[in-house]
Image 1 (tube, helix red, strand yellow):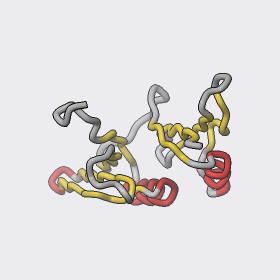
Image 2: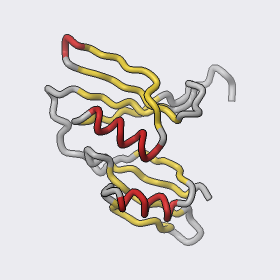
Image 3: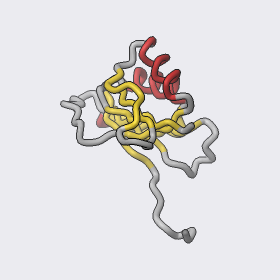
Image 4: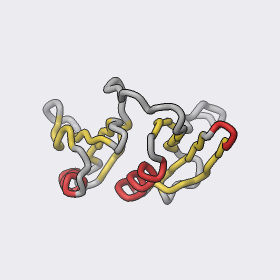
Length: 132
């Protein structure tokens, strides 16, 4: 692929409690804050997260916090996919910590990759995909 080809930069999730969401994604997925953009005049904050070892060129997760606007009903029409090693242990640990598990690890088709479904603090669906 040429260096001038488009590339994915970030995906955005609206969150109701910025600090709670930062703690969730940091604690469970090792994401670290890369940059923060504050708009104090409209009480909006955007925080971009990435893997700790990322060089700044990889995909990022943008958390959008704007207290004046309710997050609203969470749709099940989409999700974020996150690869994890030892999916059984990873999901078991999340469950013990009180993270909602909607589907325990399993293959959806014969020979397919094992996946699990969990929810973040605002109910956004996260699809965990086995990397091993």
